[in-house]
Image (cartoon, rainbow, N blue to C red; front, top):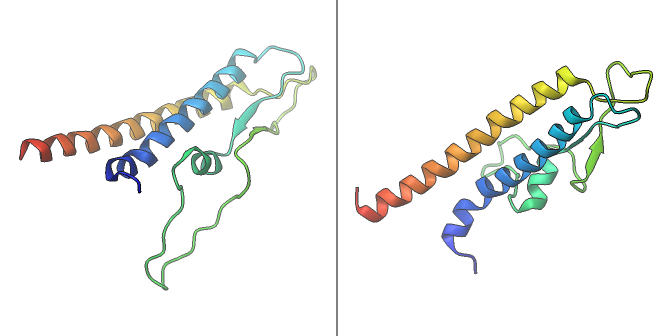
Length: 129
């Protein structure tokens, strides 16, 4: 039987781990912008979150709810197909990678804020506020 606190923190904690992994991959891509034959890598966030411990699944509690559909499979590191390939075989597009890094940072901060608000809520409940 799982602890209610574990269930409460499982999804935000898993999201933080996946965002951290994605930040590392995108940072490696940016660092290797000028490396010949370097292939840009990324991961499928939904699949990685599911494997990291968060369900990542929507639950339909009514027959009239829309059913979510998304990619299935393993959360492996994937290679990105470039919009404009370079002559040296490098598939990193620095402007796109910087945008992905910024987006991932915002999402990481949102997950961190969500986790912090849950903790503050529990502290308030313990204090009787």
